[in-house]
Image 1 (cartoon, rainbow, N blue to C red):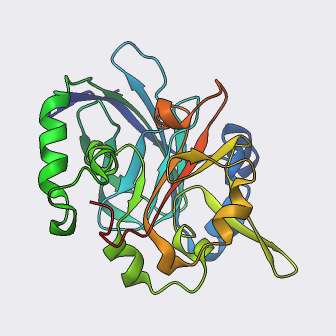
Image 2: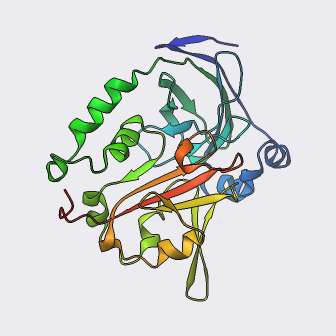
Length: 266
């Protein structure tokens, strides 16, 4: 086993081996498409196991192949699988709120599985500095108001996926579900013409509109026009959902919507 120091975190090991497809499916349930991917594309599969320095699995850590759209979040066991990874040299980035980011060079061989274990080192966060930074990042239209201070503070912390008014308008979405369609772990299904929002491995999803929990959340959200939305926060994974949007112990996801503000209530 090779041990490599990387910044303030430690890469424990990276083993590469060919697995039978049956063993691969048993290792990680999300790899049901592995056979077709390897047959058609001869692509590799990267499986990452992320823990803290004490060896405790970290849920909600983001693992990404730098320079590509391949990314995923670890589950409760601290693991995530990236499918169809192009062969060759690549950089794997592992990060989670409260821990030092880790980048690791890897070499990807077609038709194989790269199995890596990564330890992230916790860092001390100065919340006062985060709040100052969040205020500095607020657009000028909110100057002189307390509007969306908390939204930009949470955005600066980086625990979820955030859409500002500028990003929402740039998408030119026709329907509200189109705004979150590309969020990792979110699936949009249709029954006839009716959309249904699903989060992978999560059944308890809360929806908040202007800070108020909706009792029929998805329906209330889907009645909004994208032009009526000022900002959106999406959290997936119990470790990422802020306490104010997680009233129950098993809440594992939340969609937080802020309706359009026109500056009349300064």
